[in-house]
Amino acid sequence: MPTYVYAITAADHPLRLDGVHGVGEPAAKLRTVSSKELSAVVSEAPTDLRAKRRDVAAHQSVQERLLADGAALPMRFGLVGHDDEQVVAALEEHRDLYVARLEEVGGCLEYNLKVSRDEDDLLREVVAESPEVRRLNDLTRRNPAAQQEKLALGELISQEVLARQESDGKELVNALSPAAVRTSVGEPARDHFLNASFLVKREKAAAFSEAVHEVAERRGDAYTIRLHGPLPPYSFV
Image (tube, rainbow, N blue to C red):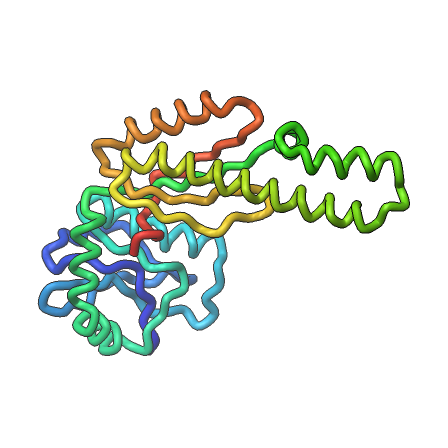
């Protein structure tokens, strides 16, 4: 029978799972499978598993309980093994990697930072700082039929915007990285130019949040800085 995997822990983790239930309807009963040094918290996998709110919440509740008592490597929602034996084989095959990751994330939490910037503010900066953008902009205003120049202007503005977003992103990450154990930068999206995760020691969580607040104040109202967490350390597993 397929085995649903929630997290991996050291074999000596307390694994207090009373009162916590797994995914599915009815909720699956949690259990553990173990190798010599590692354990995986698992349950039977529902046949119709989907990312329903109830199941996602159950998945996260298991991980939060485990993290409250010690280091745990949270698995992504929906990870299913062929059976218990395959899960144990994976624990044994990747033992060194899992042990190293558990040592790294022990006592840590993840915080995710997403940053966007007001488009009008960014465009004003591009126009103010780029003589070539100003030249092409003036030319195309005087001559609406100048199609080649319009294309060149659009391409140049895109390049300038991207360069400033990349520079801003690096500055923000560099400013916050000293307060974290590790940093992981993800792909940007349409609604944010920076998507970065920080692995932070529990005892330094308040200091990290304060550092983000200080960065936000320095950047001003043109920037929208959203901090999410604490989270299971998904980005560092």
